[in-house]
Length: 302
Image (cartoon, rainbow, N blue to C red; front, side, top):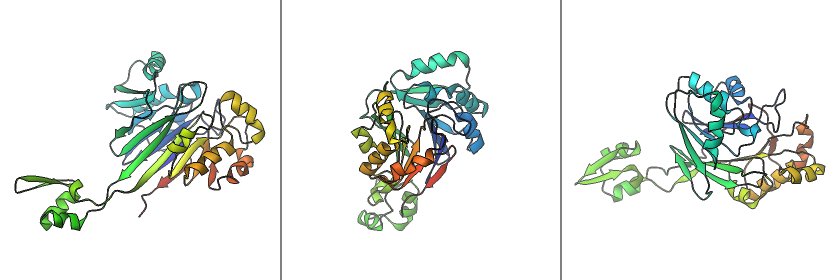
């Protein structure tokens, strides 16, 4: 299972009840953060998930409302007692941007490892999660992220018997160990059935609708997508500033076949974004307007 939390759902400037863009995933006790706008560390403190377990921070792009919370976040991680490296991922230019920010926090008790993404065909694997990206359509290079948690197949008695493995080897292999017989090493993957359905989450913000986002969110359990403007009459603004309407995000969700859509990166001009929710739900019924510290637990299907 995986836990998802929106730490900030605002765009451009923070509001009293809405910090800037940020999303957290928790898997097997480890945390992956995507975007780190102003107020992220405050929101995470309120949520209570802690800082020490943050292994990876992904950035969609380098506008201030998506990265200005990084100095405080890294200092909070350091104050939590972490000494292991933290990986930072984002479009090309990440190290240059972070080096500029580090002028105000030059000392950290852990190393930063940079992964600059210039090729969206590459995938990145961290423990039990696979991260892939696509490029959006914004005023600067902006990435969407997909997080896949694969699930291995069940132990296959038939495969174990076909290999001639004794029953005493079964539990060893089921627990990920190795078993030697007649000079040959047998591993757990040799006695597993077909992989089972995993969990997939997509996150995209600051972009016009592009076909790549449909592929990114294809058959996901949850698609978190920007809804900068709720009113369809704001289309000219969405075009000018390379953002998205509620209805456009809903069309992407419908085309992708995702199970659920969360709208985030809400314009500060929308004091009550819920009043526009029907603009999305008439296209994709299972749409929710994101709230700061809204959480969801996604379990593997049985």
